[in-house]
Amino acid sequence: MALLSVDNLSVSFVTRNGTNKAVDNVSFTVEKRQITAIIGESGSGKSVSCYAMLGLVPSPPGRIDGGTAHFQGQDLLALSETELRAIRGRDIAMIFQDPMTCLNPFMKIGDQLIEPLTLHKDLAKGPAREQAKILLDEVGIRDPQAAMNAFPHEFSGGMRQRVMIAMALINEPTLLIADEPTTALDVTIQAQILKLIADLQTKRDIGVLFISHDLAVVSDIADQIVVMEKGKVVESGQPKTIFENPQHPYTQKLLAAIPSGQKAADAVAPDPLIRIEHLRTWFTPTTGAEPVKAVDDVSLEIHRGEVLGLVGESGSGKSTLGRSILRLVPITDGRITFEGTELSALEGRSLKQFRHRMQMIFQDPYASLNPRMTVYDTLAEPLLLHGLVN
Image 1 (cartoon, rainbow, N blue to C red):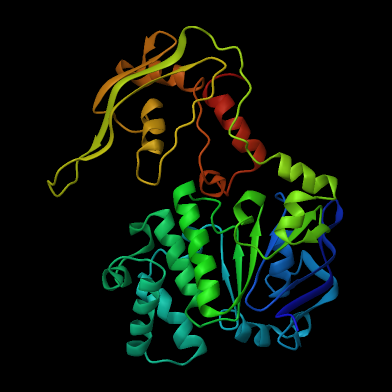
Image 2: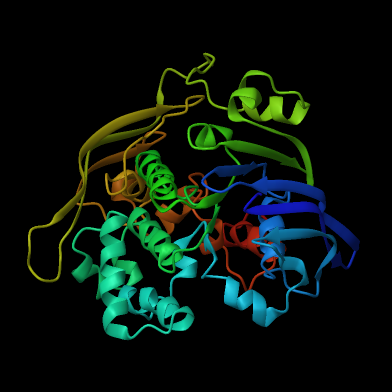
């Protein structure tokens, strides 16, 4: 008998423009001691399917139109909110995409870890703290005692995700739902987190429902793959079958989108568009300690028609280099030349005139976009700021 069996689940949202069916007669299973991966692009209904099972789809505007989700003999869709609350975090746990939006920035890590233990198991704080430290060590957090007294912002993205995994496993659930847990991480940390989830799944004997948009990410860890498009399951099967003999055009499209590592040669202008020479960006701690050499003697050129890939793990200086080029952080030394003009010497209005021609796309749009501004206002603001429209 499957650990989780979802049959003909349908979920819709009522909007100003009518009803939008986000999940349309979706069926899949998660077996004990196995990893089932749900794959699809943004908006395909992957996350909504899982949120609906746990009563996490707000109603209104969302509504469950039909289906069942049997877990350990109970239909989750037929349970009351009180009954679901007892299951969430105890028997079924979730790892979310962005731990920074899930962890409480005002609470120490230790307090957040012991909270589910005291809530679901009525464990005293002393034993709960000891159990939390053991789990932090298990997920690869160095010095668990110090980590217990730290706040979320004191950790890197990869370490925060390890904390989220520890929080999800603290009550020893039988089903773990991982919703895009590696999307915001660099490739090195991503591989570590994937291995950690797979190892913990085997060690703790649990079922895992892994949600992702990337077939390549789940290829090595999944026992079953479910492919979703526009709210429907279009294909499912074992990874070997999906990768070697995909049947649905959408699955074939996803496989074709996996980067091959090769790029067709394009026409590249002979003169560099931007030249970086011996750039240094150092940060001096207020405590008087040695400066942090975030960027140290970096030189490179980018030509028109060229894409330069900058690769490195968290803390290697990639983002700081990008911010330094746009002068979003003060540089310590070096030259930045854009179309023959040295940007490192510009200030005020002169620098502003160049900035509209050099733009940056940040990692997390949710953290970058102002939630109080409409999409129109967000797009209009830079046009008005740079005087490109009246």
